[in-house]
Length: 176
Ligand code: ZN
Image: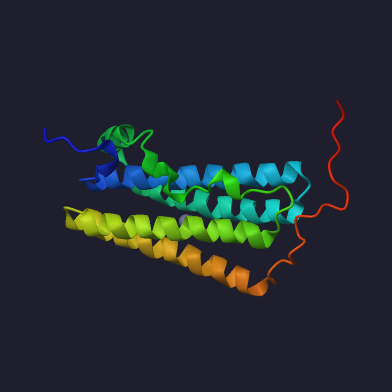
């Protein structure tokens, strides 16, 4: 076998590709659900609600992909992509989180995620070694672009936050 870093692996078959896509969408849905829980724990209901809507969208996406996958070959292919770091391609980084963050911030994070996912599938389409994989990658790329447009439309309806958004009039108190 000619070596190459694991991260450079490109799915060769449509089953492998769909398994990778499923792993990505599932990870994205879980990540958004986690973000929603985190915001809810801080009583940041509006932002929690927004992340929950994103989780629902990604979960629906994952189910669609799942319904297109069938048979033992696909299951075997999926197993090969388990734990692949590409699953992080659509997931939000932690450092952007703040417990007072507004829906606007949540949307900025989601926008970055969806753009990353769009680029990821566009790149896979370029690297694809079969027409089936290329077409599936292009289709998912287009779906991620839809997510990008949706979020851009949401963002357009929200005013940019004031510079003092992170100042808590009633900060959490800790006793020791
Ligand atoms: Zn997406």
